[in-house]
Image (cartoon, rainbow, N blue to C red):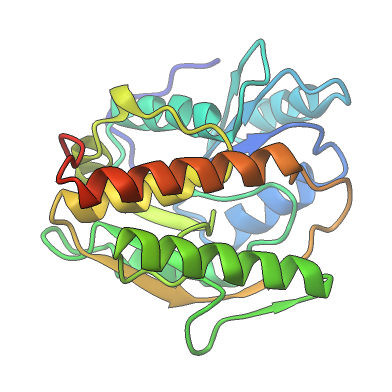
Length: 252
């Protein structure tokens, strides 16, 4: 990976994990950089067999705003984001964005997410939320909407947090919120990583806000959702909830 200056001119780094997103990456990344030209993009590719990493490398060669982090194994969304966060911290970006490469996250909402965390001392995490007033989901099968609502309701009630879409993967963090989350002991791998991070930021006393978005199904390719990912989320949330009731919060 090229090593750009550690004092970036861009106000934010968009971290975009990929695995087999060859059909989507170029158009989604292009839309992001066109919508908000003063962000940079880091593609974190988990050795995609469909050539996604090669596409990312070609994009990086053509546009200095794009860099690529190649990982040699696929060990979960959470690990990919942790690698991206570490790179953002090393390069000194004040704001870090999580965004999927499949086209489900609306690029037109990126500016609102960035604005929500623009002020130091203000909110440290802005979540692009499907389940607050003004948010919605289109093109999803009914069972997926039910599963998302049910999982978020369970997480909110079990953990006692005010977030209505804690599983959402479209979000912007101030760098100090990421640092306060103590990433060295994050073990979540799948979508429960998002719940874990929201909980850590809240437990650090940092404000979290939700920005309504319109979420769409992926443009092309296959969803990475699986029964194992759902099971991991249920087990981890239940464990965190029990620990909190016993007064054993993590060090955040």
